[in-house]
Every structure is written in C-alpha cells, then in structure tokens.
Image (cartoon, rainbow, N blue to C red; front, top):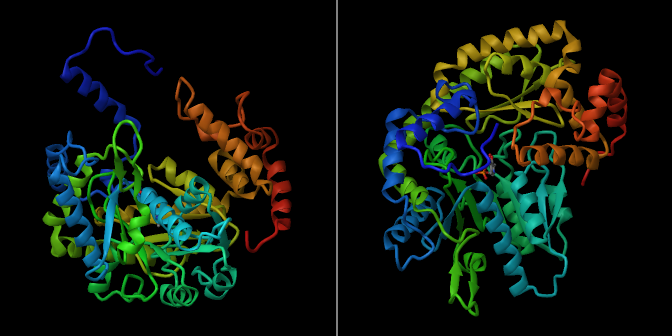
Length: 488
Ligand SMILES: Cc1ncc(COP(=O)(O)O)c(C=O)c1O
C-alpha cells in the first residue's frame, strides 16, 4: 500500500534510508548482468566515483550560468569533448540535456524553428524518418507539431535511401536516421542520406544516442563500420547519450550541431516576463548540476583508454552472444553486426514471447519488440560473466517452447502477441492508456501484465485475450495478415 500523506513526525535519516533500500528487493538485478538493458553498470569503483562527482554539485543549478560558472564550464567541456569524439570540427557546438529523448526533442525543435525563420511559407512541416528511428522522435512530432513521415526499412534492416528521398517534399524540414537504430542495432546508410540532405538543402540529424559513445571506440578497435558522424557531408546534428555507453550518471546526453547556425534555433528566449528576461538552452528550467558534473568527471576519469577497454570487453561479449544464438536452431539474429547489442527473433514457428516468459521466470531481463517479435539485448562489459549462463538457459527455453507451442497463448506471451497483432491500433492505444491510468492512479500500483483483462477497468484488448484466449489470437492472426504494409 503506498503512502498518501507526509508523516506527521520526521523520521531519522538511518530509518528512512533503511526503508528506502528495502524497496529495491523486487528491482531488476543489473549488477549480476541479467538485465541486458536500462543500466550501463561498470562496477562498484566507478559507481562510487560517480556518486561523489554527482554529489559535489547536487545543489547547484545550471539554469543560471552567471551564478554557477563551474557548471557552464563543465557543460562546455563535455560538449566539446563529445564533439571532438564525433569529428565535429572547430565550429561544432551543442548543449547537454537530460537524456536521449530530450536531445531528440531539441534536434526536432531546432529544425522546426530554423525552418520557420528561413522558410516561413511552410505551414505543415514534416520530417522524413526510417520506421526504426527511436520513438522519442515521434514524441517530438507530437509535442512540436511536425508530421512524422515514416518510411519502411529495406530487407537489410537499414533505412531505404531511395524511398526516403522520394518521401521528401517542399514541407520537409528535417531528415533523420540512426547510428545505430535501437530495434535491430543497424547503422542506417548515413553517407547516402547525407548526399540527399545536401542536395535538398535540409538539415540531417543522426540519432547516435545509443551508439555515440561506443561506435568511435569500436572503429578504433578495428571493428568494420560505415561512416556515420560529422565526417559525413550533410550531417548537421548528432545526439549521443552520456548516461548510456558514456557511463555517466542518469540524466546526461548531448545534442551537437555542425555550427551555431543550427543550435541557435534550439534556444528559448523570453524578454517580457515580469520575472525577468529569461533564456534557456533546452527543455528544462532548473538544470540539475549533478549529471553535468558526473558526466564531466566520467569523461576525465575514463579517458580514451578506459572507454576502449570497456568497448573491447563488450565487443568480445557480443561476439560470444551472437555465436551462441546462431547455434540455437529455433532462433536467428536480426540486423547487421555494427554494435554491442543483439536482437534475436524466431527462426521458425516458435513463440519469441513464450521464450521470453520462460527466460523472465529464470531472472533474465527481456526487452520484447514487435513486427517481428524479437528480443533486444544491450551488451555491457559486465555481461561477460553472465553470457554463458544466458545462452544455456536460452537454448533450453527455446527447445521447451518448441515442444510446447501452447505456451504462446499463456501469461504475458499471450498479451504481447495480441498487442502486436491487433490491427486497430486505437484499441491497443486505449488498452495501454488504461494501464497508464492504473499506474498513475492514487494507489500507483504497477499492474501484473499476465493478469490484465481481469479487472473491470482494463482495456478492450486485455479483456478479449483474458476471455477468449487462443480463439482471440487466431482471429487476430488472420486480421494481421490483412493489415496493409508499407509507408505509414
Ligand atoms: C537509438 C536511441 N535513441 C534515443 C533513445 C532515448 O534515450 P533516453 O531513454 O535516454 O531518452 C534511445 C534509448 O534507448 C535509443 O536507443
């Protein structure tokens, strides 16, 4: 039961911290390398150092660089070090943000406002995107009123250059692609897209939130990669997350532009507020000092040598993971081998989601993807110790699901399978909305996904699956076959 009022009497620090520590009992066990997502853990020594750096500036506020010159100095250095890593050139500029999503929001906002200044006749701006670009760009479309024009990827899981070129029209204010994209971890053909951006004279954003702090080291280690950073003519901005493979504390990313002519459109300036003249570089008002300080400290403490060492370990672990998955007859790898992450799908008729359920029962984190059903694993150096156990469990679970296909219609597998297949996406949206409402209700409880549909307020889709089980699934399977494929 969650607490609903502030305690009348304050409690001792020790008491509060003890209770808080206990909340962790049901959390993902990232330290043992079983999550494959969300946390980029590099050991206790680095964590302790990060906490110290973070705490040194935890009260300071980056909103006012005149008051806290320390934070401004660190932000400038973080941005410039990152720009150097991305081959940004002498004119490269940018800002820190709270994460990948904010960096992408800012790249879209800057492109929209640049178009407003330079091409004011555009009434309905759009941006041309591969279907695999991170969903935060869709959020940006939603927030900033820019239409997201999605183009299907090619069979090689990369952006389809020709189709993207064709999708550009006179209202296109931004072209974007990824290095690499999240779903299949493939780098899009950035050089070819850069040529189109130059020809059409539109800004081109590369989302390297995931790969920005990994690919430069992989390249140095001799891992074969296409070009994707500011060395590519036509690329005008890049986002890269410090709180992922930058190994900084959460709440840290950079968005970097080729020069100030792009960045200046990111800023917000108000001159008439009674509270004073107000200028802000990004979404946040108050800007937490801790993540800026921790990002700076991490880059200094890691150095290229530290990043290279961790990249080499993660690369080696990825190779072992890929080889192990390739050897499991029920599974196949998806995407190109560009990065230290892996996506696997079913090789035949076996249910990926049922395998994921069994793996979750054994304590493995599973990021379930759709269209096609697949599982995404982010690999870190600390997965070196868990990769063999993962592969052994995966082989067993895959064989078990093949022998028991009925598992696809049970538990969370049924729910995920159904969600992916419902052709009327508004129904899915409605059901997910209900889950969100439950989570953010006064009790704030996280729902048990395998029991969805049993509650009175649960969404339509959940109710269907809980009432009609595999019958509903087979109807949806047939409807799924009718769903139009192609540009959305
Ligand atoms: C390619 C890519 N872009 C953007 C993001 C969004 O980052 P964040 O979760 O920090 O907002 C992610 C997150 O996984 C990502 O993989």
